[in-house]
Length: 298
Ligand SMILES: Cc1ncc(C[n+]2csc(CCOP(=O)(O)OP(=O)(O)O)c2C)c(N)n1
Ligand code: SF4
Ligand SMILES: [Mg+2]
Image (cartoon, rainbow, N blue to C red):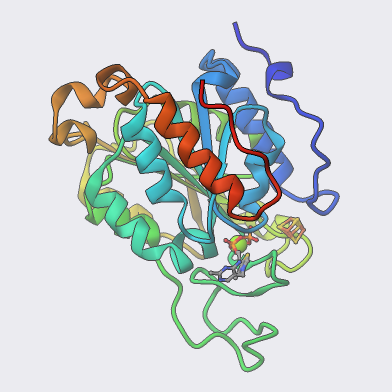
C-alpha cells in the first residue's frame, strides 16, 4: 500500500510561500495514495513554468522537457510503457500557448494519459505577462494598454475535439480536487483537468474573487450530454462551475490503433533492449560534452 511518505522527497521547493501550487501538490499526493499507486508505477511529465516544477517535488519517475512539449513526450512514454500511470502537469502558458499545437493533436490521438493544467491566467515564472487565458482588457507588463485578445476556452475545445474526460478543479478546495484527480487518472483515455490556480504574486483576481463565484456541479447534472457540457464550459463570470463537465466512454486508445497488444504491454516485452546499443548511445552522449568517461559495455 502506498503512503504520502512514499512520495515525499527532499528537493527544496522554489514556489513563493503560500503559492496555491502547494495545494495542487497535496491533492496529487492524496490522489495517488488513494489509487494505491506506488511511485515506481507513476511517470510525471512536464515542460517549463511554475506549474511544471510540480513533479520536481514528488518522488516518482519524472521527465522534465522543453516549454510546451510535455504532451508529445508523455504520449511517447505511454506508448513505450502503457503500464505506467502517465500524468502531465502544465501551466496555461505551457499547455495552451507554447504547447497549444500539441494540446490540439493530443485530443485527436487520445493516449491513455492525464493532463492537469494549473491555470493561473498568466505566465507566472516569467513575472506575470499575459497568457492565452488572461482576461480581456487586463493590463500586464507587456500589455500596458490591456490584453486585446479574448481568452481561449480550452474546456470547450476539448469537448468539441473528442476528449472523453473534461473537468475543472480549484486549488482552494484540495479534497474536491483530489477526487477529480482520482477520477481523471482512473479514466482509460485522455483525461483533462483545468485547475483554477490563483497566483498570489502576479495574479489578477485574489482567492476570494474565485471563492465568491465558484460552485460545485451538482448530482442532477448529466456529464454525458455533450450540448449541456459545452454550455457548462462557457459559463464564466459571476458563476464558475467546478467538477466533471464532460465524461463519456473513451474512443480507441492511441497505441492500440496500431497493434492491439501495444496498448497494454510495455515495448521491452516485445523487443528486449539491446544493452550494447544503449551503452554505445550513452557513451556518445557523455562524450559530447567531454566531461564523462566511457560507459561499460558488458
Ligand atoms: C520556448 C520557450 N519560450 C519561452 C520561454 C520562457 N518561459 C518560461 S516559463 C514561461 C511561462 C510559463 O507560463 P505557464 O505555463 O502559465 O506557467 P506558470 O509559470 O504560470 O505556472 C515562459 C514564457 C521558455 N522557457 N521557452
Ligand atoms: S509567482 Fe505565482 S505561481 Fe509562481 S510560485 Fe509565486 S505565487 Fe506561485
Ligand atoms: Mg500560468
